[in-house]
Amino acid sequence: MPPAPLVDVVVPARDHAASLGPLLRDLPHRAIRSVVVVDRASTDRTAEIARDAGALVLREPNGGYGAACQRAQAHFGALPRVPDVLVFVPGDRPAAASAVLALVAPIAERGVELVLGAETGRRRVAERLITTMIDTVYRHRWSGVGPVRALKFPALVALGMRDRGDGWDVEMLVRAVKLGLSCDEVVLADAHRESKALGRALLHILRHATMR
Image (tube, rainbow, N blue to C red):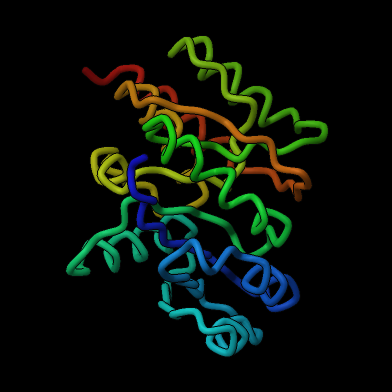
């Protein structure tokens, strides 16, 4: 049996003081190396709660979601040993903490490169439109575009992510199918939904469709 992958968790957070504590508490700490909370210019006790829970706190003053994820990627890329797997769990998704091991399992057991946390419940019209367009253009059907996901660190580097705002999640899924990464999905037991920026999502879909 291959050795367990080295796993780190990234928690982008902005004014998530109410949900961050339970999220950090419920993470499978024995199975992960570290937790990095990227504070997106919060005005509440987000950073303080993260530090009290033992997480490393990075700051992203611009506040963009994609910028926070890129800040974390740069941090891990500069370490003497980079992670095998990065797991992204936003600070307002405490229920997803218990799904981290399930997200990592397809990567550890079958070598999958990207695993999406599939959120249950009724999808918003914008999300249905985004997934339908990705399917139409790239012939890959994602069940949603939720932000909870795990991926191999070399795959993240290869994706060359650029979006510094709310289009990060969709850009990752589009680039993944464009590059032919092996992908899977794991159903999350409970989910909190929020709409994504439709305009930026469509921009990524159409822009990458025209790239060679």
